[in-house]
Length: 387
Image (cartoon, rainbow, N blue to C red; front, top):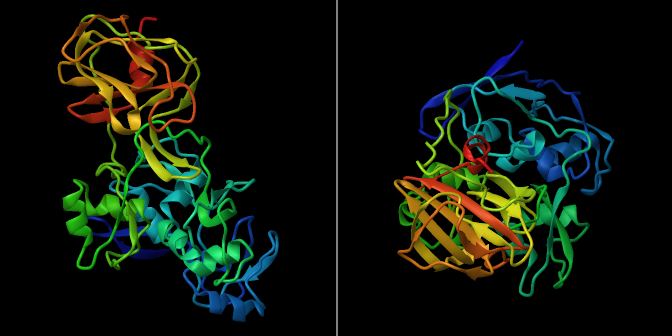
């Protein structure tokens, strides 16, 4: 019969997940492409040694399609889970021995929002998501790459047919176990920074220092506990990246009195929300990427006051126009045609499409922030833009 397995939610309150568990010796699983002994042991709550002994395995190599028996201390993950009020992706991943990346890849999530009653797949679909492949850079070692992607050296080496002491060379391609390539390699928009843990650091002190939360740090780095060690690399993400599931009715930002229009017309290459990048790990994309030709005119979506016209980090050459409590970002431009403090009208040409900053090709990164909180521009444009 179904068993209830406790886990501690991020607010340190006790929550429960209901799932079917098979604890008896003899339960079998089928190896999927990209599976490793280390990854299977993590997923099913057992150890690599126990899997080896139960299946009389010599070495760590696995072939997709073969069957493995779970050790007596293992548990079979159900196929799906129905989201409950208050759940987060991190909570669910932790309870079922998965990573946040697993859940995003298995369910093809375009954003970080989950809702009560939503069904999440806990196993990969067929075909399995493409594994994350990284290119070795000068100075990289198996150890520092393992730290960067929160895997063990043994797991990283095993996934690539290497010994733990193997030497890797710049230009080599390595598959990262348990990580998946996203549908887009576009790195438009800001990329979350990484920090190195110093002696005496705690999750709380790092969260306080970088204006985020312990929950966001744990979810972004797939941390099973709050324990840290000096030299560990952590990704810093916005505090609200993985919010708790709740039933809400979104209220769109009212259109300005002067109306709204599309800043450029072109295919959308990257949507708002949580996305996975092929090289930079996972990233919350705070805007909408619209493809365009270099030099193409960018129009002001709304009227307002230019509060920035210049270089803006990963956004490259950027114009920010403010109207009331709402700011509109136009990033990666090749040229700026307005100045700070200038009043602009809806439809006015303010910049030209480019590929400056963190960008892999000509496009516009269009972002809307209400009271400095990013919102999805697409439904606003679809419902309010007249042309």
